[in-house]
Image 1 (cartoon, rainbow, N blue to C red):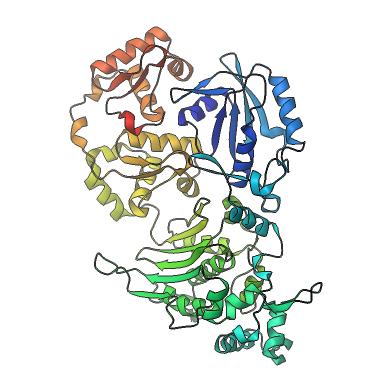
Image 2: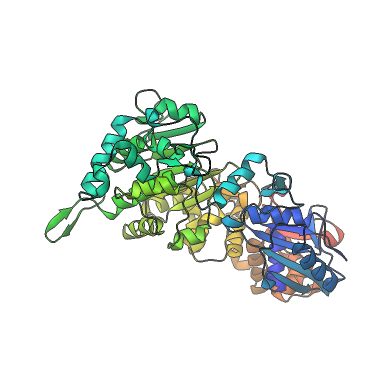
Length: 574
C-alpha cells in the first residue's frame, strides 16, 4: 500500500473492515479484541499510528516501530490469543509525511480455526464485528462456530428419545420410491426401513455410550412435524409466491408450518420446487432432435434450493425461506458462510454444514458435494445474460441470503425510467456510475460489496463512485462503513444546477472540481499530493470556484475543507 492509498482509506473513516488505533511506543491493548472480531467476521485492516480528533482521523505515527512490531508478534504467538492466522506479509509499515503507520491485514479465519478468542476462554474472549465496532459474542454464537469447525457437521447429533416412531411413513415411502428410480439396482432397496435409514445416516449409534437413535438429519428430512417441533421449536420453514403481490394481497401462495402437512425438509422441497419452476419463461432447447424442457435454469434453481437446505444452521433460531418474486428468487437460511464468497463463486469447494442431509439429497440426484453447485447457478444466469446472483451474509442477524435476479445487467426500460427521474444530467454519468444507479433502482439498494460481484473495479474505486453519486444527489446513503447502503434519490431536482456555466471553468479549476466530486472534499494537503497544486494556487482556484457557486468552504484553521456547494454536513462521514 502506498501513501495515496492510505489517504483514501482514511477519508472513508473507521468502518466494519477498518480500525484505527493510536500507538506511539506499545501495542494497544484493545487491538486484540479487534483481531478476534475481524478474524471471526470478514477480516479487515488495523492501522496503528492513527488517532481520531473531532471525528477526523489524524496521522500521529508510531515512534518505536521496531519495538511495536516485535511486541506484536511476541504477543500474537504467546498465550494472549488462541491462534495466529497471520503471515509476515500481513504486516506492513507505511511512511507518510515523515511519520510511520503500521498496517495489519487481518484475514477472515478458516472455519476450522474459529472461534478466534483471547485470554484462554472462548466463551468470554470471542468477539465479532458489526457496524458499531467490536462486540463480545454470546454463548450461542460461540457454540455455532465450534459446531461449524467439526467436519462431522451439525446434523450428525443423535437425538435422545427419538426413534422410528417419529418418522413419517409416507414421507419415507416417497423418498424410497425416488431412490429406486434413481438407483434401480442398489442393494439398499431390499433393506427394511430402519436399516435403510441407518445406511443414509438418518439413524446412528454412538459406540462409546451405546446410544442409538435418530440423527438430526433423519428427523429433519423424514420426521413427523410434531416431533420436529418438539425437538426444535424455533425451526421455521416458509415459501411464498409474491409475483402478483400488492398493497391488498401480500402473496398468492404460501407453504409454511400450519398443521396441514408433515413439515419435514423432504416434503418442503418436493412441494415447493414445482412452484419455483411453474410458468418459468426460459426457452427450451433441442438435444438429438429431442425437446429438453429441463433447462440449466431449472437445474440452477434446484441447486439454490438444495444449497439453502444443506447449509442451514438448524441448531440456531432462524427460517429456511424461499420467495418467488416477479423478477427474482430469494433463498435464505440461518447461519453464516463457512467459506468466503470468493471461494463459493469460484467453485470446487464444498463445506456443507449438514453433510448427512447433503448425502440424503445427493443419493436421489439432488445437489453435488464437490462444490459445483454455485458455478452451475452462475453458468445458467450468464447463459441468460441476467444480473449476477447476489449472495449476502449478515453476521449480525446470522442469515445468508441468495437473490437470483431474472433481469439483464442494464435493462433498457430501466434506463428510460431513470432518465425520466434525473433528466439530462444522467447523460454525464460514466459506465460504473450508471451500473450503480441501475442496481439501486432494480434491487432497491446498492452496496459496495454488491457492485464488486458485477464489475471488476477495486473496492476503493467503487466507494469513491458511490460517494460521488451521493454528493451529486443521485443517491442517498444509509448506515456506516461496510454496512452502508445506497438508495435512489427519488426527490432529485436538476433545476438547482441548471444555471451553472461550465464553459467558464478553466482547466485547473475543472481538475480541482473533478477531484472534489470524486473524493468528496479537498484541502491544502490533498490538493498538493493528488493534483500538484501548492498552497497559493490551491487557495486561488478554490476562491474562484466559490465565487462561481460551485464549491464552499467549511471548517476553520488547519481543518479547512472545500466541498461541493450542495454538500450537507449531516449526510457526510469524512
